[in-house]
Amino acid sequence: DKPRLLIRARGMLVLCKPPGWEVDSVANQSGAACLSEFLQEHFGQCEFPLLHSVGYGFGFVHRLDVASSGLVLVGSTFEGLFALQWQKSVYGIEREYLVVSHGLEVLGLRTVEVKVKILVGKVMRTQTGDVGLPAASYLRTIAQLLGSAVAGCRHSVIAIRIHTGRRHQIRAHTRAIGHPTACDGWYAPSATTLFSKGMFGPAPARAWVRTPRWDGELSAPPQELEGQVFTDVAPARGSSAST
Image: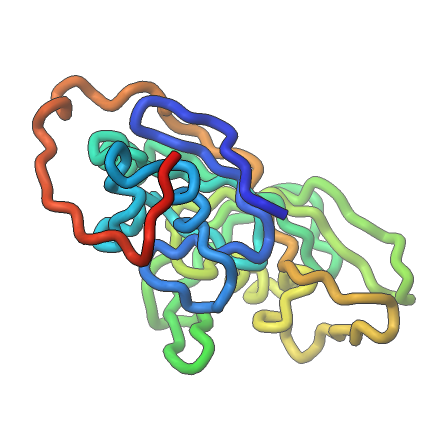
């Protein structure tokens, strides 16, 4: 699947990212298709230099795991990027995700406040524990899935709103409470059985995390930013395409 441009506002974009694409705001760390290249195919460098600048993360306001899908906010101008980053920094933007997890989580609300730290290695994973950065997630179980091709295999559908935005926070927090995201070999505890693709058809190339909703302000950037943002843009990475 290809990404889709859902909203094009003044200085701001909203994309729908399918599984298998990386929000490469820092570097392509997975070998997956780069969302920045999709943007550069549709927005020329002369009119939209920010979307071609690796030094400013190609305008991405946040990340979304390669195996996940959903909404991605992008600043297409510096005024738009700074306006979105300001909203994010003061918690003016709420992020909500839909997650399919292993096991039957109790219906209702739960707050998970567990510190996280990134384990640096060949694969960067996030670990929960007493040491690390503060992280808070608010969970609401909205459905329990009892039917399955495998006896005893049950799942829950959980709506999760995150207060902080740590790397792999949702996957680490759902693992910490014993309900790791479905089809997620990196974060499934040993007690969770992961069935091989030969048993029930091809294994899905995704973790079941989707961003269904962002609440924030997508109106034009504040007037006080107009004509006040001046910066040198780094050369584009590779060749650029025109609109």
